[in-house]
Image: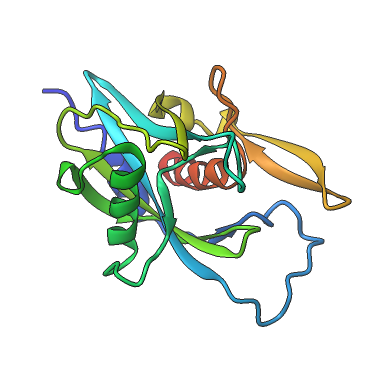
Length: 199
């Protein structure tokens, strides 16, 4: 019998870990006191294809005002009607990629991640139960694709790169896969998971 590939991920979620942020690699950044962070959630959806465990990601539309063309998890801000971060992540995934809420087995969350856009994002991890045919939300999602978890679970595949942002050099994680340049908050969240799985 083939071992359940989700088992080590469940075990990893039991590891102690701190919150992360877009500023982890930039200790010189001074964050304003009393800043207000808005709650948000993303779904980290795992899809099993045969013996291959994959993670579903999206490429944002190039027409969007914020983060155009970037690789992201389905997700967004927590709305007043959401019961909690899990409900927000599932709602956003259904809206953005057509993943029905009842087709996801949620098995945990990672500590929150603070973004430069003043969100505190909770990653919600879940397995897609049955066949899934993505339906990208027109105008917001340009593409839905998958990446082997084996690629994302290897800390050695993560690199630190930098660019000038608002006049200063800023450093961030990347974990490229084929034509997809995965970086920023998405890469940092994946790196946090990879660190726990590697323990």
